[in-house]
Length: 375
Figure 1: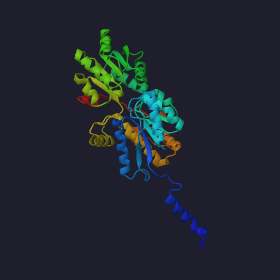
Figure 2 (figure 1 turned 90 degrees about the horizontal axis):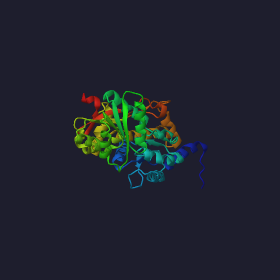
Figure 3 (figure 1 turned 30 degrees about the horizontal axis):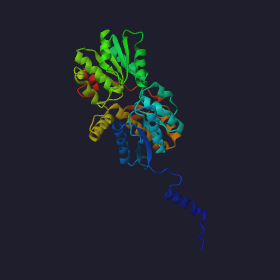
Figure 4 (figure 1 turned 180 degrees about the horizontal axis):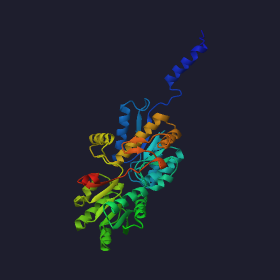
């Protein structure tokens, strides 16, 4: 016997079948790619766990996807392979990474060709703004950070002569250019610019710089190892020159431990985008949770990665996983939508980003604390 279903029953049955089969609905986990070393990626899993503990995004869990490349360095070919590995594990709502300017720039064409949003939480190269419409840097660029460093050595440290030590990559060169441009024509002169790479004998380079005259400050446009070695050598030589570094030096407690006597007297200053001592409730809760979960102090990189994951989840909650809609949502922040309120501050991109979120810290023991707190 054939059963004929009348028109008045069609809609409910179709709706029921759609609910059972998922027809017309997005199902499965929301995948967010994270291209960072294990130490940094841990905070992305923390963000996802917090989202999932409250029911996920519209009932769907957030899944952090990592690449299958075992190497954690950032040669261009490795970063390209890392991006390809992430995309192969998609579809992705977006990618958070890569770990620095060089890696992010190398991977950007892969994501732009695939039309997958790449949020870069820790890369500062000004070239990232031109890497493609799908690549969005989160922190201020090297020109802005360089000007911040220059203002500090000139106005706060009252330095009249500065030596700039810069690593020979996109980050170091860009930051050096930013410092140089901000000091040009002013009372504080750049007495020496010294390029170095990973194989350089930094102690010998410092001795050469001191031979030409002791600068009031040394600006390090590089990573934590160089900052620590230079500060320690100055202390061992009995030279009171202060060391001011960019955000690449914020690796705690490693930079303090390696600096040894260089930490004494609070002579190492490091610029960063956020500090765990920030007074707002969200920052305090985040810093406390990370300390309990990862057994270490939170850093600006942690806060920015955490914010990027949560921002992508918010975008999916608002507009779904369609990549173009996610991209348009993120770009609407600070324009047709309010800026996203993250742990690191109010977030938007490009011209809508607002004032740069930068703070100067000083190494005190094994911690980086705001400069103003030392008064």
